[in-house]
Amino acid sequence: MEFNQTARLNPYLMGAGGQQGIHTVYENNAASSRTKGASFQDSVKSALQTTESMENIFQEAAQLYGLDVNFLKAIGKAESGFNPQAVSSAGAQGVMQLMPATARSLGVEDSFDARSNIMGGAKYIAGLLERYQGNKALALSAYNAGSGNVDKYGGIPPFQETQNYVQKVLSYAGEDMDLSGVLTTGAAGSSAYQSAIELLSQLAAGTGSTGLTFSQEDAQYMVEMMRLKMETMFNANVFSDEEDSAGDSLL
Image (cartoon, rainbow, N blue to C red):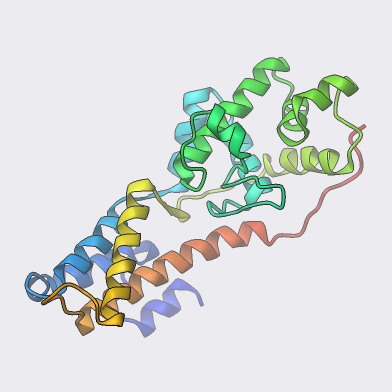
């Protein structure tokens, strides 16, 4: 369902991504929330305030490490479809699909934090580009198959997966990928969101703090937060569900 259709059905939704609508619900109910359920809404509001556009993260990372931002985005798209929670069968994690050991070497403490992961991936590919004198194909090959294999074969390794990967990323790099509408929650936001979920679970189980209530307004607020999170996931999946258009071998 497109946003404008959703907005007509739900008067709480206003503005791009629904954020203004959520905050409007919060402000309209602020008076009653101060005495009931305030802790719950404060936690959710904190989570909302720490979300940021994935576009901003890629732009910042590209500038910091002197990279072409479209090239960096192309890696994120090929690796995970911009999904911060992605985990490969080999154990690679996050937007840029960093292996745990690689993430640690890059100073990434939480691979599922999009900002930290993208910054780590940018640092990694920048180092590989420096190693291979700016040759993007070789740097991508090393990102996918390891520098050892690139050095061993003196170029792109004869692995179909790696050859397809290189061509796919280079193809994506020529696309116009605007991620302004793809929102992600940072580490602080994740903690706030989890806190809100825990409060909701306690209320549902009847084990919440004495005097803490969950009003109809609180329920609407939580629904809008969930809708925003689902919309963000959908926007990311649009990229990851596209057909694999890898062409012939680059060798």
